[in-house]
Image 1 (cartoon, helix red, strand yellow):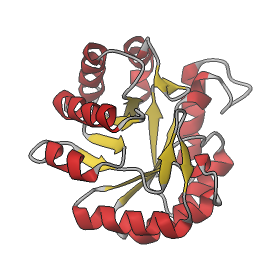
Image 2 (cartoon, rainbow, N blue to C red):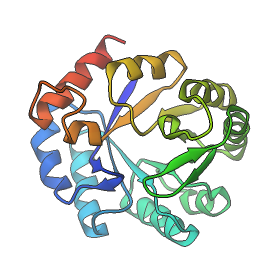
Image 3 (cartoon, rainbow, N blue to C red):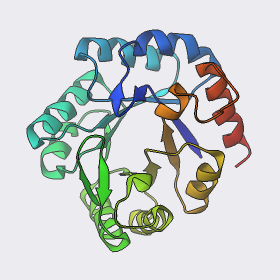
Length: 224
């Protein structure tokens, strides 16, 4: 299962994202992402270039609250050359923007709202949305399972897996322990994100540095 390191804290890209990535790039991270809020597009352009130069796949997760802001973020993501665009729900507007680019789309299933984003909706809702995403040509889905307000997170992951078929399932948000990583994997996810838990030291509580936190996550992934 893929570990996506998000250069984010509290659902925002950290201001020193470029500097932090340069400090950890030698760890061999294969998947690195950020949010569409927190820093200017010029900074994101530098960051995306650094991610690609390291050989990693880039991700941008859209968490803006208004439809207009989400669409603008999707446009910026495509212009930046981000490989995988996560989040949002505006398929009718986003998919045409990405046509002919190298960016694939993974929208939010369920009923996301607010910032930090919470997820409403039932497993049946999530399964139906994921099935529709694949029918429309999306590469997969970005599921905020552990931000759920109405359903069991693991049940939502299993429902998304069923709806996506062979699509790529990413579980984002609040995956902050090896136990949750195991649960996410067992329920059928292909990847998960961690951001805040690395920066606040809550993933590996006896380790102090960001590098140490990341090494622990990577080591745990290797055992699953």
